Length: 95
Image (cartoon, rainbow, N blue to C red):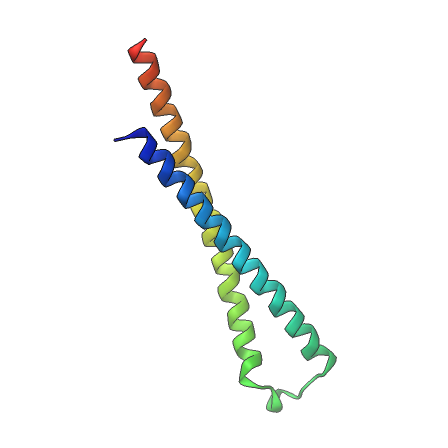
């Protein structure tokens, strides 16, 4: 296994996790703003629009996406750490 490709894979995974984290947190913030406007203009449960239910489903989805991004970042950090250990071992054996 090439150490550079391991570093590259770890870094790419970490960057993807960071991008997903940013997207999901922005969507959650946007959903919070939409929910605040709905509480300022309350509707009866019968008149609640399907978009309100989609917003709560979307919020749940985005929270799951945040957790996935966290796990992806942790896994990518382990890949980088392992590549670092591998490189250290290669340097130690060649010296």
